[in-house]
Image 1 (cartoon, one colour):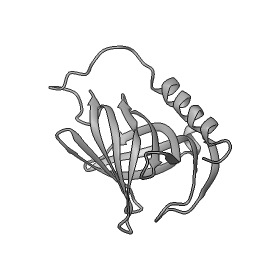
Image 2 (spheres, helix red, strand yellow; image 1 turned 90 degrees about the vertical axis):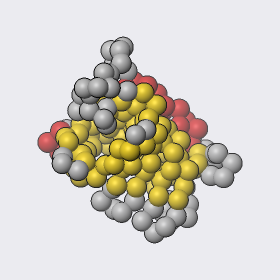
Image 3 (tube, one colour; image 1 turned 30 degrees about the horizontal axis):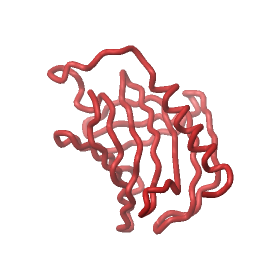
Image 4 (cartoon, helix red, strand yellow; image 1 turned 30 degrees about the vertical axis):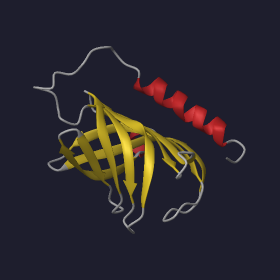
Length: 158
């Protein structure tokens, strides 16, 4: 790993722990939105056909979302990472993510250009919007991004 990557990974984990903490208690599966809760990241499928394993989690709670994930290599070592969050609104076939903050960095991997360290904090009226189609199939969540890429998660709570 390059110098600083471990520090960034620790920072991303601290960010996720800080922004996802909330009141204890579960969701009533009978009445809650099927999207709400925590989901563990499994795969990142690029529009060009390359698939990368990923590790991390995404949380959806009360119109807010947070994600922390790492694209890992064949040994399980992290090569890219991103911590992002903001608010979301449901649409008929998915969500519109409002990106309020982002911390990301990454090495070049097949299908992915190198990504220099980026730290962004936006006011809600300046935040970028990302309409994203979602599929929830039992315990599996797939996010279909406008780029044509998609990420697959498995329910871990909710």
